[in-house]
Length: 406
View 1 (cartoon, one colour):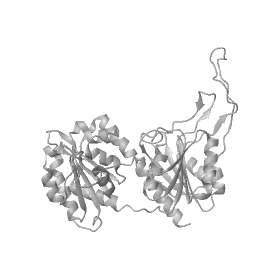
View 2 (cartoon, rainbow, N blue to C red):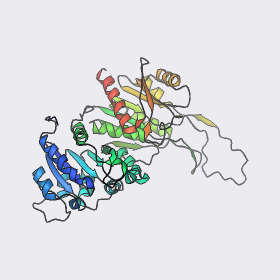
View 3 (cartoon, rainbow, N blue to C red):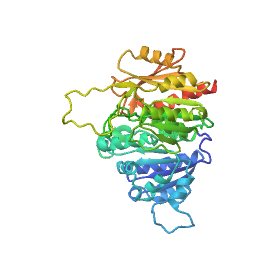
View 4 (tube, rainbow, N blue to C red):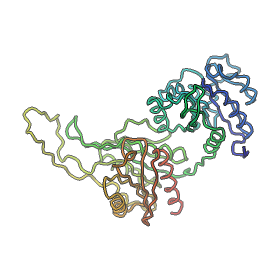
């Protein structure tokens, strides 16, 4: 293994759980030490059935923590102290049980409590039986955690200790170490920039209980906000309706209607450098909103609604953007490139992210997207299906290049 100084002096907390692959943690710890890292190990009780704490203590040259309620050696709360020391947190191997507990917010032992308390990036390396890994609950937990910013190094395909053949072997050592290096080496390249991101669906009321809206869940916008904050940006997230948790470190402004979003966007326009409009904003609203719930009894068979235009926020931003970077989205069902380019030109955008809603794995609600990004010179870059968090990083990369050249 080629040794660099990237991990020199960095504190890596290694969490080891009760998987047969726990014995491989010895090699992980040893390799991190060779790279110059300060390694501190937390083991679950199950992990100690597969490998002794003494082994990992010897290799890490640090005490191994297991028990939540061990009498303290000094006056500090151990899980908080370890969480604060971490430059990165590695869970290897991570069982389905551990992944499920973290996804559910359960902190009932030292390892899960420390993960809950840390603000360092967390890299999870799953290892388990293939059927457990492919179980919809496990996959849903992985998707949930990935959406919250937890990072994963996928398991390998091969013969498993249980005798099955399939995906579930702990990732190879060099892949785990490379992933840790990538996390540690991640630059805060958006430090000094202030970014405004819009996300989610607006709601236009018909009466006190009904509204017009769309299928947007806000996942793309929230992924952008989280990624931008982790890269050092100051982020204002203006969000319509969504069930997503607020990204840490982000200023969240909740709105309901398109007019409320318009007001919030222009209230913050002067202070931002980059604007990414990923919200799905209603083009129209009911001209009259009933003060009381409209009753079915006695009503005509057809409910006639008269709609009026909402303000075109993206167009107005394009007319007033100055030197700011302005990025929009185009969700289309036909003639994708032409519609997207015409929208970009009309609204004076620097980039537009175009996705075809008819493709499986693209568009609203899902955790992935398939897009084409078009710039003002009509250069088109196509991307394969990828997680929205991965796409967020690529969009931010492009926004930064434009901002640096302004």
